[in-house]
Amino acid sequence: MIEVNRHILKNGLTLLHHRDKTTQMVAVNTLYNVGSRNEDPNHTGFAHLFEHLMFGGSINIPDFDTPLQAAGGENNAWTNEDITNYYDVVSLDNIETVLWLESDRMLSLDFSQRSLDVQKQVVIEEFKQRTLNQPYGDMSDLIKSLAYKVHPYRWSTIGKEISHISDSNLDQVRDFFKTYYAPDNAIIAIAGNISFEKTVELVEKWFGDIPSGNIKIKDIPQEPQQKEARFLEVERDVPQDAIVKAYHICGRTDEEYHCYDILSDVLSNGRSARLPQKLIMEKKLFSEVNAYISGSIDPGLFYVTGKPSEGVSLEEADKALTEEIELLKKELVDETELKKWVNKFEANDIFSNIYYLNKATNLCYFELLGKAEDINKEVDKYLALTPEKIKIAANKAFVETNCSTLYYRSKEKA
Image (cartoon, rainbow, N blue to C red; front, side, top):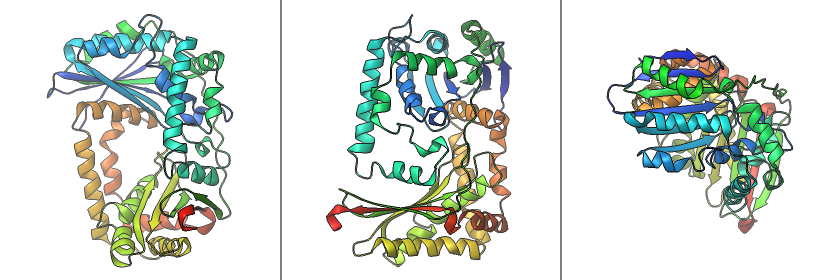
């Protein structure tokens, strides 16, 4: 059981606290409720750009990393479709260094042309490395834009195109910051051997005077139900063909979410899962096969991907994948098979929440989803799954008209 304390500052900042007496270190995790789904379709990649800009220095502190490293700390950040997350780890004696740094960039980020130009170039190079110059780099973008026609999940966190970053200016950047990076759009979780009373005192000291942003999150257009099978075929300079099938599923807070998470494990979590066993080891149809869910807050996607073996066409590969997916609709998953994957999730959940940094990060996310205390109920939701519930979910999602399919052909084999 992870014990959680909560304090809401007058400016709207949510503080979560967990005391971990096993360490003399402390983790400070700051989650901003902004990701690529909050972006303008004509100005994408801004949330990811801000992940970089927030390390570029504030008005009072020219470089974020230098004082933290001098205090023996470490830090990093990441952005996805739904959130932007920053974390810092430091010895308990130096916790005020972290709170000083995080509060200062929340209050007074430095919007200089020089900082913007530097970080724009960093993001542009990352875009080139991830998407343009990486084999299969645009595959994710292609399937997303095929499956989503309205929702902003149709573009990746890195952005739709380089020009959206290269053409951005200081006024656009300032506006994005004022819209989302404020205490009333943030959650801070602190985990370590520090009392709740002391934590509240320090957070009030460093964050209490930051003005509220009066954040009003704009409505995000919801994706209408897909009513026809979608198909796209492309050719690229890659060593072998690939296929991606994407089915629309529910969002992270829906009851059926856990069914789809387990279904992805049933299909491809390790060598003993169905797809590796049947399509790689037995039938030799694939050299690589996988299934996973997007895990997004709004309704997401269930992906099934693979690279056919030499001599196997994409059409044959598609047929084999579809047959395996159809079995989940026709037959109940065996109780023993289901229990194996639920047990594996339970073990992973326990181990992932041992480390104090993971606790801080996960508490922020569960608070965003509903309330941080729900972190203690997540395993129970998997334990409550039954073969019947799994089958119902499979029949709901794995429908031809709910599927988008991408054939990613190798020019070398064309």
